[in-house]
Image (cartoon, rainbow, N blue to C red; front, top):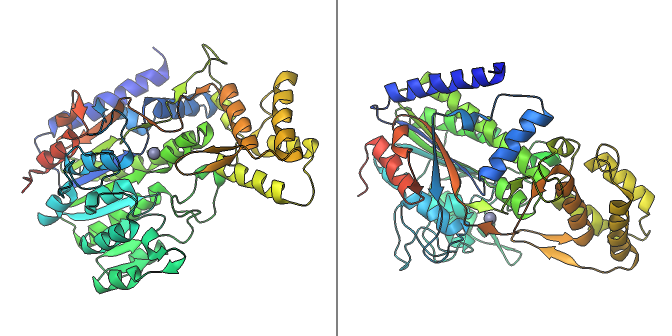
Length: 467
Ligand SMILES: [Zn+2]
């Protein structure tokens, strides 16, 4: 047996022993991690990158937790759920139709476990690197027929009474370019609206909505691969929530931490960005595990996803029985940022030159420098380059969050081909998602879970009855 697998087995055995021996305890501190769009393909590609590219043979922290199971994600209206119906199922235990939030399929409002736990004295934090009014956090506090009702969702965030809600933005603060009264309404509800993560610890307010000003877009704080300076990480979100809740509700708390950018990068079929988002999410999980080690008999950590996005696989038709995750290492920019760069070039006075573009691709994505590109592949890239920049053909690729320049689409397709990443969709899929757990009540999650089972089991672990 290799040294690394011995170590892995030992860690798993110790964690399982601890989990089983303490399983009778009640969960007073609950961490609910939701990797949006994070399925076996996303997890395994990140783990393969860690092992093969970074030379680190210890698997992802989430993979080392003692309880592993599967979760089904279909909604009341489709085998392929959207984040609103999936978020509602994971928050309330009720299936609903795609686009609906915090309501059952008959449009009747249903309570989330965050509400039940809050009513039982638990502090609540809802943290995401997507927008604070996006589907996943919204499912825990809002009740609307459509996830796009951002102004209404923002008001309901203020009314929730929850201790901390964090995300890239509150999109209801503006409508049609005009400022709404949402900020005033939030203040009238006794909630402080902050834009500096450091200010949370300095504030005396118990109820805070944080939308970090460093966020790159209003739908996402930004990708790690873009090294956006000052960007709040999911790990920092977890630390901030632990500190805030430990201060205001030290006896019991519940936090939901979502990594929405795994989904966004998967919609874009940007494999390198996905891998780095999953690794960052795993660091946040490590932070929760540190907390668990100090409170092992009272802490429950559950990690799952709301659905799969993109149909991502380790391996594709170009690489066959192989994959080259090390080709993702030189990537310094996301597909969004590269597409923006291409759009700026199209609007510039000077036509771009292929030699300069090759240098840019080599510098920022490793193509031609680290990743060998055959003449046939270079000609393919050049054809799209000429069609886009010389002939000015403006074909676009539209996804839920972005609208990509065709040359950026071609370049990222080639990156995926070379790295051995397969994609089948620009949308979600109905595949299984994984569930990992440790701590008080973790054994409840063994066996197959439907998404509606997960929140009910969390309540059971906490000894709280839904009213
Ligand atoms: Zn999505």
